[in-house]
Each structure stands twice: as C-alpha cells, then as structure tokens.
Length: 358
Image 1 (tube, rainbow, N blue to C red):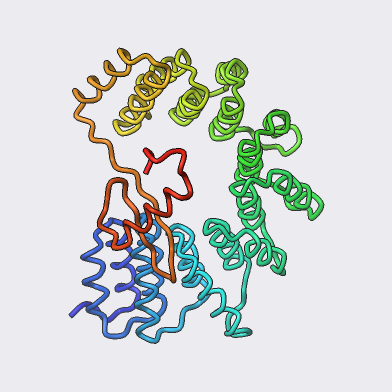
Image 2 (cartoon, rainbow, N blue to C red):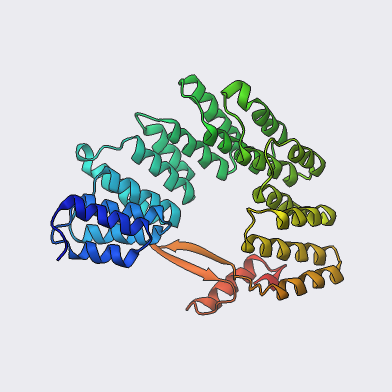
C-alpha cells in the first residue's frame, strides 16, 4: 500500500507523469484509497502537458464516473484537452455543466478563455464569439484566443478590430497576440497590413519581433507569390532563419511551381542544425513532387532514389471527424470502415471531375 500522506501521493504522481512514466503514475494513483479532485487534476494536467490529450480526456470521464465533482481548474484542463482532440461534444457538455452549476462554478477568465479556444478549434466561430463577448473579465490570453480564432477562420479584419479594442480597453498586446494578427493577415493574403504590423511592432507595441513573427510574414509573402520580397526579408532577419522559414518558402514553391527557389529552400533546410530527419525527408518528398509537377521527371526520380536510400517510409495521411460524440479517424488507403463504399460513392458525387484522388 502506498503512503497515506496526500502531499506525498500527489507529488509522486506528478513526478511519474512528467517523466512520462504513465504506467507507474497510474499504479500509484490506483493504490490510493481516497482520490480527491486535486489528484485527478494532477493526473489530467500532467498527461496534457506531455501531449496525451486523449488520455487526459479519458481520465476526466473516469473521474465523473466515480462521482467526483470537478472544479474550475479541472474543467479548464478538460476543455484544453477537448480543443486539442477536436472533441466538440464533450466541450459543449462541459459548457452546459458550468451553466447548470451557476453560482457553484464561476466561468472565470481562465475557463472562459479555454471555452473560446475549444470552440474555435472545433470550428464553432459563433459560439466562440458568444462566450468571449459574455465574459465579465478578459485578460491578454482571452484576447489572444479570440484573435487566433478569427485568424484560423479567415476573418483578418475582425482580428485587427480585436487588437484595436484591446488598445481601447488599455490591455497591452503581447507577442502571441501580434502573431495571431500576423497569422490572420497571412490567411487573408493582406501583405501591406502584415508588413505594417511587423515593421511597427517595436515602435508601437514595444515588442521585438521574434523568429515566429518573421516566419509568419515570410509565409504570407510566399503565399501570394512575392518570393523576391520574401528573400529580402529573410536576409534582413536579425536572427538565423530556422526550418519554419524555409519550410514556408518550400510550401509556397509547390503552390506556385517555383522549382529554382524550391531547390534553394531544400538546400538551406538540409544544412540547418534544428532540422530533424523527419523534416528533411518531408522536404525531399515535396521537392520530388515539385519536379514531377514541372515535368522534370529525371530530377524527380533522382530525389525519389535518394529518399529510398535514406530508408524513408512516408506516413499515410489521416483526418478525424466527430459524429454523435464519437471521434472517427480516416487513414489514407484504409478500407476497413463499415461504410467505406457509401463514403466513396458520396465523394464521387462531390468530386466527379477528379475521381483519381479518392
């Protein structure tokens, strides 16, 4: 039997989870005779920090099954797990649970921000806005979540309006907020606005642009085909461009079929110390595809042979959709789904001009 000291139990669980020793953490947890909400929180939040969002959400459901009442911290952690896994049904359930508990559970700034983020990542823009506007208090993280929501949904002007509202409410934006605005500009192709925000970050907001801000603007310039300007920006970056910068260049080279710049981007990527093996392999796959699109089959086959020599096995693409509260995963080439035939028949109706992609 494990120590009955609550602080010792909680500390050991936290240590095991953060060391990614999941089975050991669970063993200690299961040996405890009285598990309060704090210990459930430690288990959930530890799993979430280690990247096990699905497991964290599973622990939350298990806690509810044991009849343990979740607190604000626990619900915020669960909402974050819902956001990372796209579990809209569970996220809505938590929202309704908070509403029903009324005065017993306050929708504080942390839980409200988590709800905004969850609804945004699950594709429910209207609900995210509704929660945000209904919050009695908002901090810089709340604004960052709302701006990020508008960014991923392609509403760049609304993201910029949020920034203006922040200034009017005397809340100083941080680097994350401005990255969200730059991302919104990137998704909407707003080059002039993006350049304005990057060039005025330090003077207007007293924030020194970091690598991720430059990377975002490089992505914006490349997406609209302004490769010369993108290269000039890369040259004047005050820090060495990392893999995210050259990856953004390479992605746009595929869209615009720019073979020469794609070759440069791959060369730079392969020389970077921060570029791992998977990123290198992915870059070579993209380069080979660009060669084939440009009818440079000989170069394409040369890169494919190089990929084969490296022992690369391309991971199949996959996507996930939630239906009636259950997450369903689709993997490229997998025909095990019981409705496989009906799904493909529907896709043929939707994309009759391109049946080879099915």
